[in-house]
Length: 309
Image 1 (cartoon, helix red, strand yellow):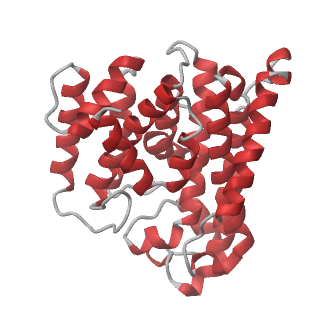
Image 2: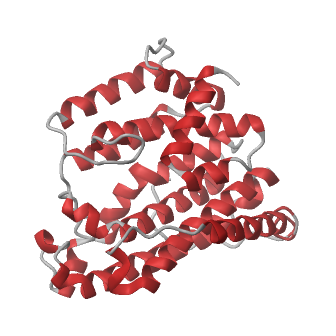
Image 3: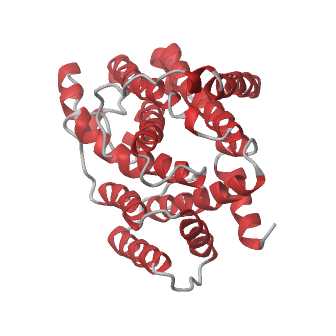
């Protein structure tokens, strides 16, 4: 294992135990590339949020300058210039090896730009534009890492859908924490319907209404999770297993948020180790079905869902 691969693996193990567990199911080469891509995504997010491996968010005063540096470093890496930062060196390695288009990398940073600008989202479609930037495009890039061709748009759309489902789930889980940090992602028209002022989302007085909004976000994620399942049949079996496991764990987070109701934000909702193991086993079954029954038949048409691809 190279130094870049070792550093990337350490980043994923500290930054996301759920993704680290799923990545362990990949074959060695795919795992290394997925971890290097993850490390870059995690680094960019941390730079903008003032975090360390996804922990300890603190406001940053120089957000625009940090953003411009990320754009510049990413463009340079994609152009083949030798990065001095190992995170960008790792990203360059996987991007050039897997043929990741520059536009996808820049779309992700565009998503972080929305956070820097303090953008608010009036409709679900507005929010999905943000979800594309910070998660949908990541799913798309991960699909390329797993061997999907850049011109295989149907499969890339399914990968996009998984990222969108993940992000809607994350937003539901983190509504209150995000609001305390000055970020409100719930569509403004949804808040208005429930009588929740944008500057009072974290107020305990609105907790019942927020629980209803969280369920609405989780419900909005469901068709994207369902669509993503049909992309598994176009992946190698081990990759399909890893993605199916991750899909099961993230979807479980949303189910747990809904089940907790008003108390979902008393402490951070996490999936237990036992449930993660169950979802991993379940993912194996889903992957085997995807490689057999699903491949023998015709995939259903993708539903009429929002899409960037």
